[in-house]
Amino acid sequence: MISPLTEVDRADWEAAVRAYHNDAGGTLSDDVYAEAWSRLLDGTRIRGVAARSDGAIVGFAHYYFHTGIWADGDSRCYLHDLYVAPQARRRGIAQALIEWVARDAEQHGATLLHWHTKEENPARRLYDKVAAYTGYISYRRKL
Image (cartoon, rainbow, N blue to C red; front, side):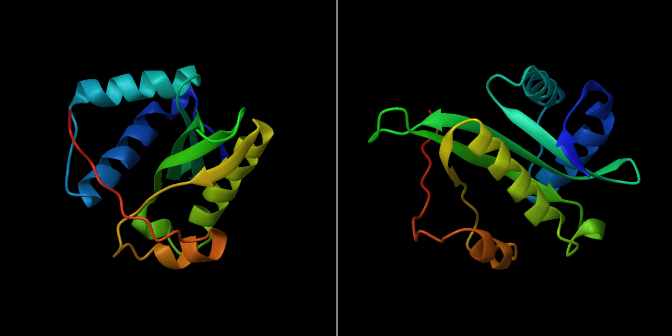
């Protein structure tokens, strides 16, 4: 079952997000998690949904809407984080989360759902089924 995050999800969400960051080789401060949680519940700038099994969060997605440059009113949805706990993988949860976000994006007028990932991410097999690989490489510059 997939649904928006609610106040009662805080502990399970934080455990899942910490596992996600640990898998990626990093951690964040308690203050950063608290601020992200507050913004997720507010739902105006960023959104979050959780996949649940037997009442426990086994996956989540975080996303936000933004405008495009080249078409007036062009709204897009960026899938920022997608995670499924190792014990719950290969059961269609990641695809269900992507489809949930896509439906929400369409309902809010978005014309494009997009995300990026590492080249070696095994989830690319799924991504290649549900979206088109664009060939772009991501760069970052910290400010």
